[in-house]
Amino acid sequence: MTDAKAHYDRMTKTPLAKLIITLGIPTTISMLVTNIYNMADTYFVGTLGESQQGATGILFTLQAVIQAFAFMLGQGSGTMVSKSLADGDQKKASEYASTAFFTGISIGLVLLVGGLLFLTPFMRLLGSTETILPYARQYGACVLISAPMLIGSFVINNDLRYEGKAFYAMIGLVTGGLLNIFGDYILIRIFSLGVLGAGISTAVSQVISFFILLYFFQKMAQSHIRISSVSRQRHVYFTIARVGFPALIRQGLSSISNGLLNNLTKVYGDAAIAAMSVVNRFSAFVMCVGLGIGQGFQPVASFNYQAREYGRVKKGLLITMGVGLVFVACLAVPGFIFAGSIVYLFQHSPQVIQIGSFALRWACVGVMFLPLSVPVNMLYQSIRKPELSSLLSLMRSGLMFIPTLMLTTHLWGLLGIQISQPLADMLTGLFCIPFTLAFLHKKTFEP
Image (cartoon, rainbow, N blue to C red; front, side, top):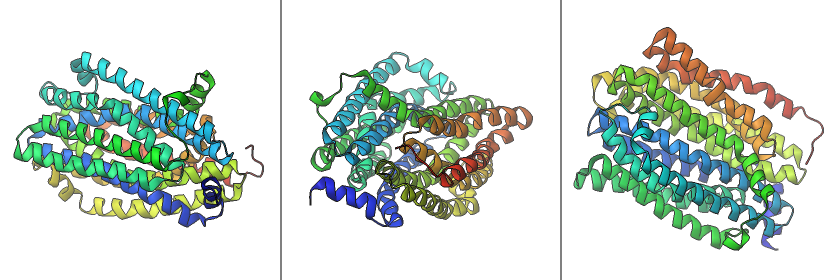
């Protein structure tokens, strides 16, 4: 049996729960480890002081900006790679993969040069105070230097997932994450390099992860990355951008929202920024479970929709929502119960603990609504309905969160900042229910 035939049978005949979990677990592990090393940065840097820890919150926003472009290219090309393989066209799949990869490297180089040239105003734009700024500059320079590799890694990771090779994508990201944690310990604790050490560790681990992922892609994927396969046709770039646009919205609005959150929070001091930094890191850690299972569903939805197995797509959506809810609850419930202890792990300041523990409990309630919104959003993106997916992507970090943040902060100050994202998560989950029901009751489809 050829690789293409075996892949087709696997995607269209394997029991759905087994297939989605098989593809989703490696992605979930990858995202968990990625978030663990983000939390490791928060932990190790938090031992240096409130201002230093506040810098990790500022740089969390910068990383979201870089990842916004990476996910747009990765998920846009990955969807088209999956479609091309379902049609038996490996050459076209390689064209999409190569075009997205080299476009991502180019965008990363632009961000590197532009970001370093305007580093100080960029850090202030993201919400840095004057006391946080020196540390944000150190960390930010390292993140920007590694930007081309980071974007390239996420493009490769997504293309591997959409080819059903999530295990190899996991190895690359997990290796980078573990190296980052080890590097934080060595450079911060042993060599006393402070925030600069955390930045160097992040950059080096991302470069190593990039080369591991590139090796696996060239060895294991049906498509290939070659300069000769980069498209010269505008419609290929347009298609990648159009299909991946919802991912850009999700990550891009997240970075804008985090920047706005930092700017509104900084009037309450470095302790408030540090507290919300811890909360955001933990929320992202919990959220990645729902996203991981949803990303396991994406190649299943994309491939089966193109193969006209619409019943499998519907059933897969319900399975993804149910499994995602169970997985998220396993982290959110302990987070709610032990909120104070979790914040204490990262920062011992009583003020940070007071602000952070209350916000974390609200955040753990809010993330329980993500399984109502994330899977259906990813569904519409995977079946190449970017208009609907873009609308749903706008909700959590944009149309729901920004007005909620502005209104609640105006009415209740710091309390409004603490509860704004959870309220937006709840509203977004409820908003997405009709879109889920509409797809489940749909009788006719356009391939």
